[in-house]
Length: 152
Image 1 (cartoon, one colour):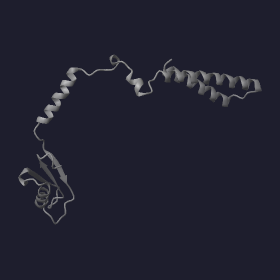
Image 2 (spheres, one colour):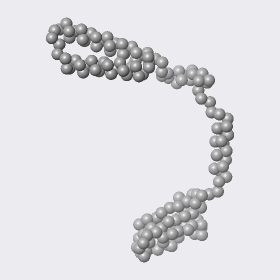
Image 3 (tube, helix red, strand yellow):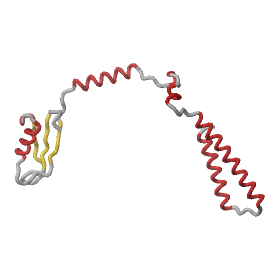
């Protein structure tokens, strides 16, 4: 029995319960027979659920007991590709880092802010380029670009 079959049986049991609300029983015998049928159906479903749950490993020991042949082993080529990618990342030149500084005060210049940024980050002002952004005469934001990895 698989999960799809179990779901079909549960669905049928719920259909019976819905029918119970719609069908009036004329005698106690009919009512008792219906209840007995439902009890048998539920017992069957419970048994099937228990069988399914027994087949699922529940503990780490159960999972560890699975033989290595059943688990997927990584291929040697894949491991070599990962190692090569890590080496390439270490040898790659530093990329440019960018940052946008927004909401500049009207009474300060972009040069003063960049100079303060360089002083705070302890880097040379020649290692940074900045572009004023915005259409207003004093810029409202600046785009700062550097090759320093640790700045941003």
